[in-house]
Amino acid sequence: MTETYIKRIIRAPAVRAMLIQCGALPLTLAILYVMASFRLPTDYLTLAVVQGLLAALLTWKLALAAWWRAIRLLFPLAVLTALALQLPSWLFGAGFLLLLGWYWSTFRTQVPYYPSRPAVWDAVRQLLPADKAPRVIDIGSGLGGFTLYMARVRPDADVIGIELAPLPWLYSWLRAKLGRIPARFIRGDYENLDFSQFDLVFAYLSPAAMAELWRKASAEMCPGSLLVSYEFVIEERTPDSIIRATEGGVPLYIWYF
Ligand SMILES: C[S@@+](CC[C@H](N)C(=O)[O-])C[C@H]1O[C@@H](n2cnc3c(N)ncnc32)[C@H](O)[C@@H]1O
Image (cartoon, rainbow, N blue to C red):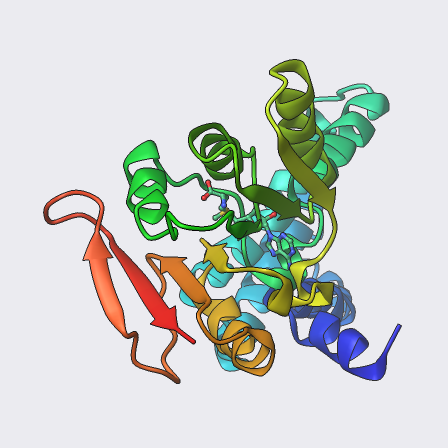
């Protein structure tokens, strides 16, 4: 694990929010200790309220996004409620594993799953060269919709989807195998790929990923290739073209190399 990788994990908002919650606990215990000496209530509900308020205050002071304040405020009360429900402990383990499989490194990448639509896939298809077998990749292929569509409508193309999260990857891999669709699905991080291997790179990520994506694409993509980003623009470089799959719809930004 490189130093930058560890730094990126520590800087991730979800990790900072978790550290804030942990950091608020000694302060909460100190406040409850003082409250006890004044014979004020120091039950679990008071602890959860004080802890939530302190964590929300620290979240605000450390300038995390506004919605983290609500999460930090309500988290201790949610823990208390879950304990009161007396649910079997395996349920928490199963829920954790399910969410882990679905989201995996989202806390670090800040790119969760949400799908693009067939109209978007078709608009991208029209960008592919007709006179050669193109190499196409969807970086962050989710449930595989884009990749499977592209492999179906351009059977001459080499179409790959790469996905970090194991459950969406498994689902898309099974869809390709069971449907006998010649699409390939890789379980991994697109940051470790060599973009020079592709004629078209399709990205539907999030604003948090775009600067790094441009750094990688501009270093690796070959002359004649295209980078297409649905919805999210790269601030560092004006797109060469903007198209919309439907009138008034969300833009597809295109950079030609
Ligand atoms: C917004 S979804 C897009 C899904 C799909 N491309 C589509 O258009 O329907 C983004 C996906 O990228 C995946 N992802 C995020 N960062 C990634 C990375 N570094 N390498 C591979 N996949 C990543 C997420 O797990 C998520 O499934």
